[in-house]
Amino acid sequence: MDILPAIILALWFILPAYASNGLAVIFGRGSRLNKPLDFGHNFIDGRRIFGDGKTFRGLVGGTAFGTLIGAIQLLSGEKIALPWLGSNAPIGLWIYLASYLGASHDLLYFLIYQWLTFSPLFFILLDLPINSKSILAPTMFHGFLLSFGALLGDLVGSFMKRRLGLERGQPAPFLDQLDFIVGALALSFIEFIPQIEIIIALLVFTPIIHLTANIIGFKLKLKKEPW
Ligand code: CTP
Ligand code: MG
Image (cartoon, rainbow, N blue to C red; front, side, top):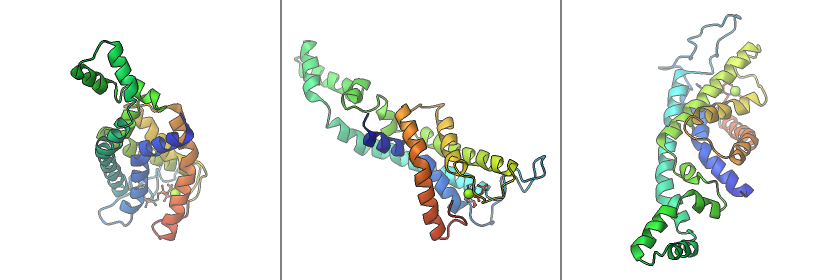
């Protein structure tokens, strides 16, 4: 697979995780109808379990928003991306196959066309991952797993930071940028495992995107720190 389609598919695949992690910052602001997920309790080492930066509103709001993004992806995948790719179907090859199978009849040709378009063979011919259909038009469950997984990963990251003695908001390079992506991928694997190229693209590009987004969030005064 070429690098550009890999990056585009990777970003499309992970979008619900980015959305939920980003929107948790907005939903989590303020204390009205909000509580830290650890209710202010300490762990056995005397430090906070997660800290004040991980709240119920952030978790619920982020997950709900990410799942909504997943639903929009399903719709746009089915209505836009797949029909567009379908119009690129290798029709010459399909006709050849149909005639090879003795299918001169229109209906039979139509059935073969229907059957082969979006099949693994179709995507191999376009030099795309064989399961591209599930990436372009993902299920809503997929959106939920990525969104919830992202915030669980973020929570585990904060748990680790507190155990290392880092206060809420102190930077932990790589952990801050990658905890949510690892959580999102891990949870979504129960439903779908993407190609290794896609996973690598995500691990390489996410820290850059995350840092850029956080600097913008900081400048817009949505975030307290630029990391
Ligand atoms: N946030 C939230 N609930 C979550 C995740 C994030 O309310 N489950 C909000 C908090 O307001 C948090 C902000 O998003 O301060 C930024 O998130 P993050 O950078 O992950 O948290 P930090 O405050 O930096 O805390 P930590 O040191 O634990 O990473
Ligand atoms: Mg932080």
